[in-house]
Image (cartoon, rainbow, N blue to C red; front, side):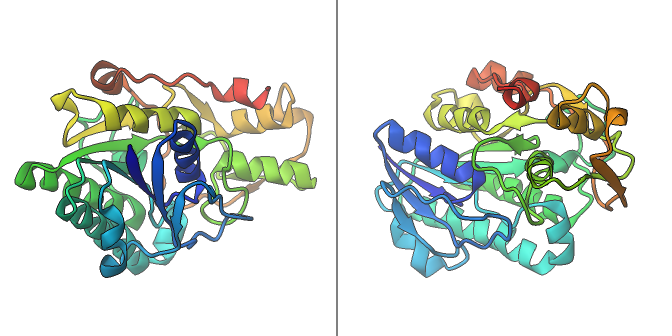
Length: 304
């Protein structure tokens, strides 16, 4: 089978590309290396690699020929950098997504799997978070990613083009960014601890997150590409582990101490605007329709 992965040299994308290559598939990768956080990007030499911008429609268009499924992961990611650059976020996450959808449709691609965010739920909803809850977009990142969701649903309803949409909850794991504004907190804390500098705790550290291992995210994408269940098409699915931990819990686990009070390897920094206080996924829908369930627990992964 022939697949195309946008953002395929980044964190989630590279893990998906490696899985597809290992399974013997042909893979086309599009990535413009725009992230500020990677010490290096993760290009798989067995894939067909193109350092292109998804907003360059004429350049990316021919790459979709003969592709069965597109995994659209490329994005202007992370909340704070989108707050600083809202026009860039809109261009990449909305216009770029429309370019990918149109190129896929016009080339006869069967299906597109879209990577979105749990940031869509904002502050208005009380966890556990369910896909039927109203959207509460607090920042340019969530606004533009939700706009991408709506574009996907429109292409399914108007054109009959198959899409599946995922809302990820705090992804971590192999190839994760360790620095820069795109980096997730797990990677940042690990880098800081390895460097012998204090871990930076945003706000009071009591905010909670649902942490999802990248291999579970990859598995969800694979299942979405293969499913024959029509109930999946044009639908949104949560992808999370289903447990949440506070930032201070994470400090304790990464610092390998029974309590943060036992050491002084962290400092508090000012809370950031536009971020939800707590996240916790309800993934019943993904389990029922896609037969997907997360397998890797953060604490087990850190203790491996």
